[in-house]
Amino acid sequence: MTAKAPSALPFKKVDPKVAEHAVERRGFVEVPLDYARPDGPAISVFYRLIPAYGSRPGDPARPVIVVVNGGPGISCSAYRPLDFDYGNPASPKNGALDRFKYLLNSYRILLVDQRGTDGQSSPLDMTNPAIDADAIALAFSSDRQARDYHAVIEAVIPKGEPFFLIAQSYGGMVGMQYLSLTRAGARKPKGVVFSASALPYEDVMAACLARRSEQLKLNRELREAYPDVEARLAAVRAHLKRLGLDPDSINGLFGLLGKGVKGVWEKNFVAHLDKMLGQARAEIEKDARDNFGEVNLLNYILSSCNFTPGETDRTIAATTSARVPYEPWMIDENWVTMQAGGGVAWREAFVTAMDRRPPPATPFESVADLRAAIALNSVLFTPADNDAFVPAESYIRSLAKFEVEGRTRIKRLPGGHNAIFLEEGHRAFLDWAASLA
Image (tube, rainbow, N blue to C red; front, side, top):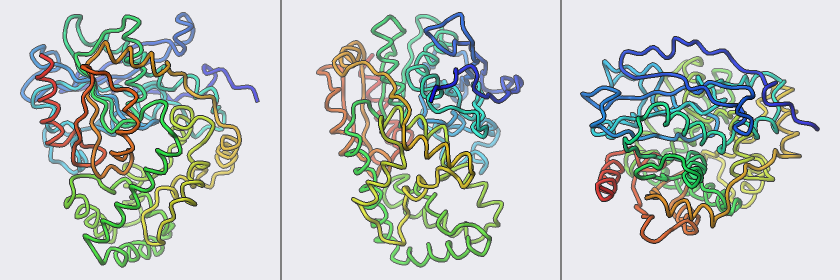
């Protein structure tokens, strides 16, 4: 099968008025679709510069942190909603986790919608059967995204102003690609944090087995904290069935496992179950779309080419499910993964074809070259306890190959996958940043 040219892929339209905002500085930066063809087709990359508390977006006294968000395949609005209510930060519509609650005390935050995601940076129409996995893997992966971040940094942060990079979750892949660019003259951050991040050259199966095993442990910890959780989950499953929803869709709550410090995340998980029992179908479906477990087709493609070359999420899930079995009551991310086709004929055929022949792997520099790039920078790695996505021990083993004496540090944090954005993560960031002065 011959891949379509990336320029032939279907894109959604973006309302240019999204750049108008009373608090944030927003805008678009035009970049090549293919950086090897700078005179070829171009796309627009959307950014948001969020001011520190009591400040303004252009205040040079408040350094910028460029936050490279996770995914892949999600926009930066997952970290702060596009319609964030600045007049009432505690508003429920802002979400349960304000990822920048602490960082904005001292820093400005620069966010970028990664190209092609369902945001404002030339979003792909992933509902159109004309999409092509190989073309998307080529044009929308971490190597191109890193260049987009550099283009935005050049356009938004004045020359000479220091800035930091926090590369979280999938953002670690983009962050490593950005470090490669610094060897070729790209602007160097004052420091880079890889927080509970994906890293290239992992032992893929070992990492995926560790992820499933960690979620198994968290399921058991949930039952230890709430011995009646099996009955609570059964009640929610029955409620979903009464509403005409698949009872097994409750597995989409895997993202809540370990989300926060121990003793708090379990309470929040059970509170969410109680909330679901009082929700109508439309509310539950909206929550699923906005927050939990819905398989994102762009994520499916980019996960394959970045994380698991030669495999897809479903082929990996089949192996990890067999090797790490769960009890029937448990919340199981792999169930969600296996629904990637969504019951839509063309999409089922698309995913099955990908499973049989995954798209080509994303190019990365060698480990030696990446270490040489790290040696030019200051890097902090932050594994997190109770991390349902990147278990701490597995992460520490993976990052060992990237440790460079005098340039890298490791700080283990409590609080799960989003630990760097919690209070203790903020303190760790401030201490490390101060040491670089």
